[in-house]
Amino acid sequence: VPTGRSKLQNKRASLNQQIIKQMRMRAGAENLLKATSNNKVKEMVLLELSYVNSNLQLLTGQLEGLNSSVECFFFNLQMLICILFSQDFILEHYSEDRNSFEDEIADLMDLRQACRTPSRNEVGVELLAKYYSHLPLIESRFFSPSRQTGIFFTWYDSFTGVPLCQQNLSLEKASILFNMAALYSQIGTRSDRQTISGLEEAISSFQKAAGILNHLKETFTHTPSYDMSPAMLSMLIRMMLAQAQECLFEKTALPGIRNQFYSLMKMAQEAAKVSEIYDQVHQSMIQMPIKDNVPLFWSTMSQVKANHYRSMAHYFVASALLDHQLSPSDDEDQQEKTLSQVYDRIPEGRSPLDILKKKDERQCVGKAHIRRAILGHEEALRIYSLCHNLNKLEILQDILKASHQRSLNKFSEHEDEDEFTDYTEAPDIICESEMEVPATTKVKVIDFFQRLGPLSVFSAKQRWTAPRTIQLQPQDRDLGFTLKGESPVQVVSLDPLCPAAADGLKEGDYIVAVGDTECKWMGVSEVMRLLKDVDEEGIEIQVVSMMDTNPPMVHHSSCLVVVFRERLSVRFV
Image 1 (tube, helix red, strand yellow):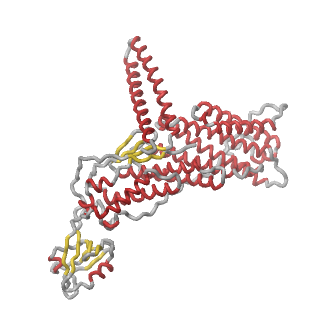
Image 2 (cartoon, helix red, strand yellow):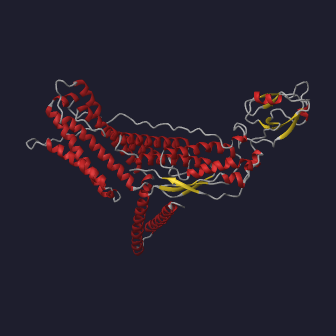
Image 3 (cartoon, helix red, strand yellow):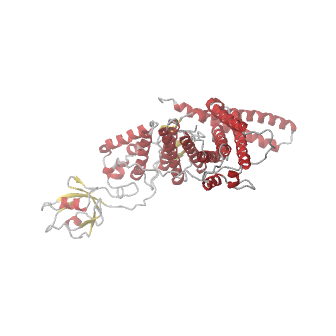
């Protein structure tokens, strides 16, 4: 409400509904066109089809513009508090007064409220990570596998605007991971890429985004969301790695590129790697069904960058071959090894050593590379001119034109009017290094509801009796049973004739309190310390007994109201 971003979400949802309506009309018209043999009807249908296709183009353009400009969206997080209050789960399942947990519930609400508007930095990511780490604890405490809560978790796809619902906390967990990755991508795009520290921050952020998306892809394999489908996540992972690789290239180039053979060859391989990954991103984006929903701005930008960095790679190799000659002081073997590692294949009839030692061969291959650089830059400029949204980025056009002109100047420097036309084709440039996808790190948190007891026993999937009060009266300092386990301790070796057994104590009961002292988290030694000084009057203890963990399924017809929360969009610049 304060930001007004829900209006953008409504616009996107409205546009998607209109597009779906137009596509249905088009499908019906096409079926009618196939079925009819009346020429007059065919003319009317064709006219209607032209109107529908025109409307589809306009609507798609509006949606594309909205997708490319929006930074934030809203998505739904169901309030777990509804479970705790409306269904009184704490009292019903744990036999505890819910009012005694008001502070814990308030802490959970504060954390969830803070997650609605996380700051665009590491603090915001840590906040989401903290909430994500609490979700498995909340799930274990309050989501029973044998009980349907009637609570629907809703997610609005960022690419389609279509909502989906699921009665499973997995959707909540997946949505938090998706937003953590999106937040890291925003941190990466906002980093100062004019400094080494800023570039290192960008590289780290994009890598972490890729790592979280990869964890999401491997862990939540059945999430019914288009955003979190395997194909979409694979594309987003590649896009994050491409941007990280691009920042690594910029970090290498920032101090300045030395006009030396080895430095130029290294830059060529770095540029080739950036181009390769952006090409993979583009290939992912043009596959169905991703092609229909990813903004054209994204796929065009990835195609422009793939061509641009490929051309840069050829320019660097051309500069290394044309501007430098193998001298007696140079390490011939090392240069031969370096050149052979740059190519996926050597031009037919040539060897790396021939190219290095023979001036004509060196000039011929160098010019072939500069020609490929010029052609690649021209293709990047052509693709740039075809995208309306890219045309707004004048700085991008300036960079493409400057790179193109630099390659033209290099070609002019070595152009010989008297030489015959050479049709040597420059080989592709490769880079064997791979950027690793980092593993995700977990944030350690303290369970808000740890007073309910250890999760190994006191969880939603376990069932036990209400606490029973047992009067202990030792006979000759013998209580009639022994204790085992960690926490809570369990009654074993119970004497069926002892007073405690007569008062209702059973083999396998868990002791949850001794007198006025709760001991759900106490071990054997601590509980025995409380019991060792019991006098003849005895002491009261409270115990619970485990019940069958497979009761009949309980259905609840009521459904809880959904609550919206901010969605973060993946950034790509």
